[in-house]
Length: 213
Image 1 (tube, helix red, strand yellow):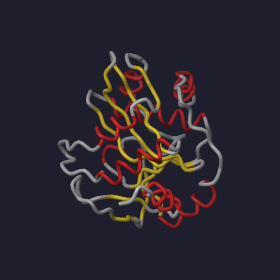
Image 2 (tube, rainbow, N blue to C red):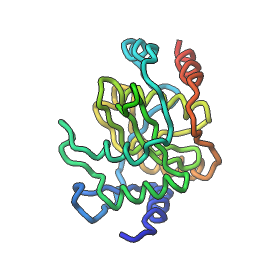
Image 3 (tube, helix red, strand yellow):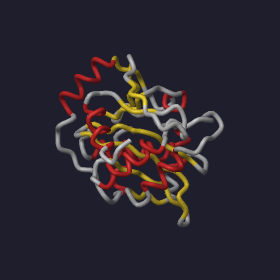
Image 4 (cartoon, rainbow, N blue to C red):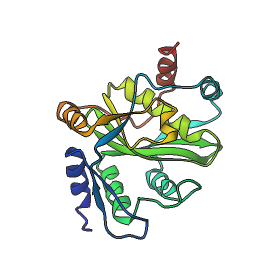
C-alpha cells in the first residue's frame, strides 16, 4: 500500500464499504460491502442496570485521542473468541494517518495511569464508523461504548455504524439495516459538519443516562 492509503480509506467509507484483512500478517486489504449493515442505536442504546451501576462508580478517566496508536494496537491483539485480527499494517497505518488529519478518533478508558479499555473509529460527517474496541479489565469496552454514545448524542451525530452485528453488540440493542438504506443515510449525513471534541465532559454521560430514566 502507498502512503496515500488514507485517501483510499476515506473514499471507501464515503462509498459505504470498508477494509478488512485476512490476518495481521496479510499485506492485502479486502473491500467489504455487507448486504446488511450493523447499527448501534445512539439514542436508544440499551444499558443494563448492572452497567449503569458500574458507570456511576466513576473509578476511571475518559480521554480522547491521547493514545490512538496504542488503542488500535490493543484492538489488533488476538484474544479468546477473536483469534485472528482483521487489522493489518496498511489498515493500521492508514487510520493513524486519518487520525493525524483529524478524521479518526479514539476514546480511551484509563485507571491509575493505565489504558484499560477503549475504541476507535472514523468520524464521517454526522456518522461515526466504529471500527473496533478492546478491554483489559472487566466492562471497560462496554463503558467506552456508552461514553461514545453519550458524546455522539451531545454533538448530534445521526448514526453509529458497527459494520457487523456481534453477540456483544446485540446486548446494547444493535440491529441490522439493509446496505441500500445505509447508503441512503450516507447521502444524507456524511457531508454534514459535526465536531469531535478533544476532551470528554462527564456531564454528557449524566445527560445521556438521565434521558433514559
